[in-house]
Each structure stands twice: as C-alpha cells, then as structure tokens.
Image (cartoon, rainbow, N blue to C red):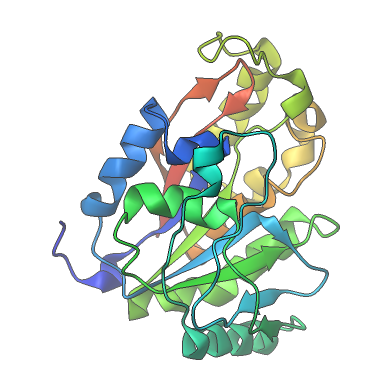
Length: 265
C-alpha cells in the first residue's frame, strides 16, 4: 500500500464495462486489483456514476447504503454480491455545499444505495469495503462542460484525502458490440474516437477534450452520454490545469473501450 500523503491523490476516471468485471478475470479486473495499492489510501471516496442519473446534482448521504444490482440477465452469483461500505453523510453535505457554492442546485439523498458503476470497480480496488463511499449523480441532458464544472467544484476535496472518481466508459455503444468475442480487435471507429480523445487528455487540452462532439465518430461511440460524462467530472476534479495520465487501456468485444486515467495538475 502506498503510504504517501493522501493530499497527493489524483482524481480518477474508470471504465467499468460489464458488471461481470466484479468477478471475472480480465486485464481490466487485474488492473483494478492493483490500483488501490498504487495510490495513497483515501479517507473517503466520491464516485460520479453513469448509473446514477438526476436532473439536479444529487449526493448520497445514506449511512449504510444498500448494494444495488441494477442490471439483468447475468449469473445469479452476481446478484448475491454485497459491497457493505459505509456512507459518509457529513461528507455528502460538504459536497452538496461545495456544489451549491459553485452555482449548482445540489441536493442530498439519505436513502439511495450504491449502483454497479460504484461498487463494481471499488470491489476490485478496495475489496474490504472499509472506506466510506458517497455517490454523485450525472445528468445526460446537460453538457460535458457542465460536468467539468461539477468536477472543478470538487477538486479541493483531494487535498482532504478524498478520492474523486468518475465511473463510466471511454466508448459505450452496447448495440455495436461483438458479444461472441470478448477479445475482438477494436473497431476502426472506436480507435478513431478514443485515440483523439486520449491525445487531448494526455496533453492537458481540456478545451479540446470538452469539445468531444467534434471528434471522429463521437456519437457512434457514445449514442447516449451517461457513460462519457463521468470522465469530465474526473477531469475537473483534477484541477483547472490537470493533465491526464493513462493508467490502463483495453477494448472488449470490439467496441467497449476501457481506458482509465488519473488527473492532477
């Protein structure tokens, strides 16, 4: 375990892929198994999840959040998994206050649990579930820039030992996947988009990254935006001058890009 000061925490964007990531051996699963030990241990975690959607930014203040199995058609064992991390009501209020101060109509929810966009990657990173977790909603009806500003409001949390995570997908078009071949070569249109976006993130070009619809095959990679916008929360949480560092890169079923990034100035 890294024993560096928790104030050295970056923000993270993690592609969570299929819920089977929680239990299957895969390159992305093995990467997440190592990731928790590669960073300072956070005192708490805030996760902006693709599967927690609200018109107003909503922060979970549930003291003991349920594990939500918000998917269908998977093996029974997946539905028995529990991730019994504690909530952090005081942190949730702090997050909501920071968002309100930044002009967002944020609210807290004292009952909502942790969806699979939250617990699937955290189960691999922190299997003991011994770090408090707060979930933050996204809004696909808004813009990348709106989510970036949401992240900027959370950047000071990193200096307080709070890990801010965006959990989504670097490319996410489920209808285009080759479900029969997990290791199918990446589609050309996936590479065109992900290469362009990755280049901007690694260069610290936030303006170029925010203009994602101008990138090649943008809407083919993200016909809906809920899996993309957590990236911009993470980018903003890295700070105004954040530059991306590529932590992991993989593609499953031809079209499910599973890049992971750390962001810090």
